[in-house]
Length: 170
Image (cartoon, rainbow, N blue to C red; front, side, top):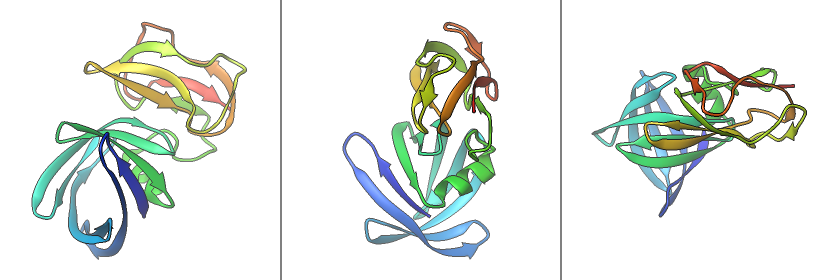
């Protein structure tokens, strides 16, 4: 599982070195090994202990390319590579778990601020479909696969719940 984490000032490359079982891992970040224990992981976030320090992360936005999260009140983007998306989406049930999935669904509740595509538009995986506002933060909802927007399921200023359909992409 390889990944890259970026925030405004830093970038970290990492991978799982060893699975110790019972949700315990040895991970390597920028050539330094760390112990990681996943306490819980679901569709809203993850709780974990890294080097004996507790952390809680909340998912804001997910696509097959990246996850926007807040860890201990710090916004961070994780760009996924190789198998990371399979692990996260397997545990979270998130949209974009596979390219065969037609409907792009909201991963968070929020208000629709803008819609960036129209029915019939061609999109690439990772293109912004709409922007939601949740907890005073704007979050981009991105296409989970390449395709054509078959239908838009939302309207500007509407409120969506977690799991509501955003668009169908064929």
